[in-house]
Every structure is written in C-alpha cells, then in structure tokens.
Length: 390
Image 1: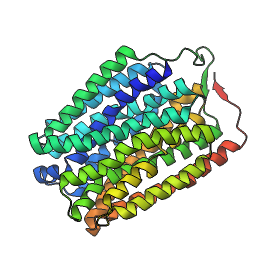
Image 2 (image 1 turned 45 degrees about the vertical axis):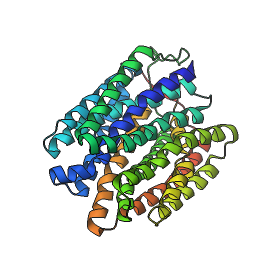
Image 3 (image 1 turned 90 degrees about the horizontal axis):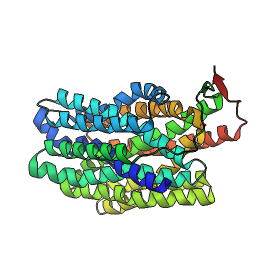
C-alpha cells in the first residue's frame, strides 16, 4: 500500500516543478515584454519561495487541526490559481502576485508531501522513499524545461503558466480521491501537545540548511545555466535541452543513491563524492564542447543524494512533532531559496559574467557536507527527554 501511496504523491508533486519552472523558462520573453533585468527575473523566481518564509510555521501548526490531505489539496489548488493569475498579467507586478499565490500553495504541499512520506515509511526504506519523492521536483522541472520552451516559442509566454495550472488542478483532484493516511500513526489526542526537544531543534536546523543550499544551488543551475550555454553559442532550445539532461538523469540516480544509502549507510561518504561531482560538473559547464558531459555528470552524480539529504528531516523528528518540525524545516529552506535567485541575478548584472551565478552554485553545493556532518554529530549526542505541553 505504501508504494502505491508514494506513486500517487510522486505524480501529484510533479506539478510543483512544472509550475515553478514556468518563470525561468519564459524569463527572456519577460525581459522584453516588461523591460525587466535579470535581477528582476531572479526576484520573480524567488517570490515563489517568499510565502514559505512566513507561512511554514502556521502551516505546521495547522497540521494539528486539518488533515494532511486537505492541506495538500488546497496547496495544489493555490498553485493552479497562481499560475492562471500570472498567465493573465499585463505587467510584471501581476506576475509577482501570481507567483506569491502559487508560492503559498507550494509551501503547503512541500510540508505535507514530506510529512506523508515520512509517516508511511518511518523506519522502512525512508531514504529510498524520500529519494523517489524528491525526484518528482526535478522531473517536473525537466518537463517544464523542454515543454515550456516549446510552448513559449509556439504560442507565447502565457501558455506555460496555464498548462502548469491544469496539471496542478488534476493532481489536487487525484490526491483528494485516492490518498489515505497510514493506520499505525501514534495517537496523541488527549495526551497534550508534544514540543520539540533542543536536540530536535539542532537536527532540524542542520537538515534544513543542507536541503536549502542544495536546492538553491540546483535552482541557480536551472535558471542561469541556459544563459551561460547561450553565451558560448548554443541556441535557446539547445541550451534548455542540455540543462534538462541533468534533471532527467537525477530521477534515476536519486532513487539508486537512496537505495545504496538505505542498504550500506556511509551517508557522509556518499555526500562527499556527490558534492565534489556537482562542483566539478559546474566548472565544466561553460567549457566549449564539455556542456553535455557536465550536464550528464551533474545528473548522475551531483544531484543523486537529494533523497539522502531530505531523509534527514524525517530522521530528526518524532511523529508527534513532525508537522510543526516540518514548518521549521521549510521556514529555513524557503529563506535560503528566496534569497538566492536575486543574488545570482545581481551577480550577473553587476559583473556581466555568465559564469558568476554558477560560481555561487558551486559554493552552495560545497556547504552541504559540513551541514550534514553537523547533523551526524548532533544525532550521535544523547537526546533530551521528550517534552509535552499540557
């Protein structure tokens, strides 16, 4: 049953990547249509993450009163509405409003998709399950990289937003109809409200930091990698196709990496190898004749440990505090994700060097390992007693 549930959540979560990628895919058209610079495009990309900075904690609290399914369905609905608003925009301000609405839905779905999988797979192949779940994000992005570019060139920049909205709406209906929670979750009603221990706070901050910088580096690669490739002579469609290769490959490599981690452990060794591969692939990306090789390495090695990193969140928290803890996790994650695209865009505007944002991505990938080592250290220390509020 849990694998069928995972398949449902994977398919639904693909919509997050499809909707997120819309702005990056049509960014060049928006610079022409609305006179934006690349810092402005980066800001619109980052606005998708802004609601999470303020709503992640309230969303975690709501989990005590509203079902996971209701939170995900409402979030997917907001993603659909936000994409529609952006598609109807006549100025950049309206696009920003649409991105904020979609971002609120993105926050709700991110928190509760993760919690659902942690509930179903706690103690049972959680790294594998998280690897499969998080691969839905790059799968949706890869679909968007190829599909949005074609839709934009054929029908205009509005249609990618509309297609993404339709997908999110269908996904909402599927989750509403078919999702069921596991039957063996701990019952906490009447026993007070559990509170996170100091050890859980330290663990979730490390896990969130690692997941945040990892994804911020990936988004920088997605958003500014095509610009780098176009600067060395690639067409817009060719650049989008090359960059998307990494996203397609990580769907397979991520699942394999999760299985390796579940079977053999050695997570820090895995992360050391993979983050070194990520940095090396980005160094190669702008070299003539090496871009496809770089994208292959990026997908096969650099992005493979996504599920291993995300699994830290499930390992950090007891089920009784998981909803609230995920709110903390995603508050930190969204803060990092919202800040990075404007910074990357500003680097490009100030320096005029297409490689500049890619260097930023390298630094972010390099930060994953020390945060993972800190997580391991805190997890090995004796835990504080669980606290319950009466």
